[in-house]
Amino acid sequence: MGLWKKTDADEKEFARQDLAELTKKADQGLLDLVYFDGSGFNLSAKVVYAWQKRGARIVVPVMRGTSQNVLGFMWHRCQKFSSFVFEGAIDSNVVISCFDLIAQSLEKETVIVLDNAPIHRSEEFAEKIEEWEKQGLKIYFLPTYCPSLNKIELLWQKIKYDWLTWDAYSCYKNLCRELDEILSQVGSKYYITFA
Image (cartoon, rainbow, N blue to C red):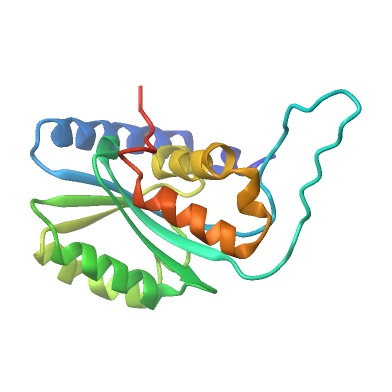
């Protein structure tokens, strides 16, 4: 049984309805709807398959080492994207600092959708929620085990499986360069559409 089966079906449906209502309000310009999540990027290639000539073999060396950890805020319909990149581990204090920066730049009431990762449910994070609400930033926690409801997950997939080239996995410097280029152009050169 996979993680997808552990979510209560009613809870997931209620979340879908909530998100549909928030999406409608965002489309009407009544609020900003933002999807938040983090993802790690390292030299372990994420390429599932590739075409090659018969008899040829594509080899991508797997290297362990430093990761680029990205915290991303993706506005509804990918109208805007803000990211923060770190080497090494990310804790609640790092996430809180990023939320503080976003809260300072709000243009209207904003709802940020996020999952239930332990760093999002920490005591330190919970203590900031009321302060953010006073600034016009509200937090919407998805039900557990519902990554499919967080649209930024689609962005991480596109980066890992489509936009990073083979060359990005040849060395850490190339990975950092390509990832930085992609992150800086999400919404212009690199974009996703939602049906």
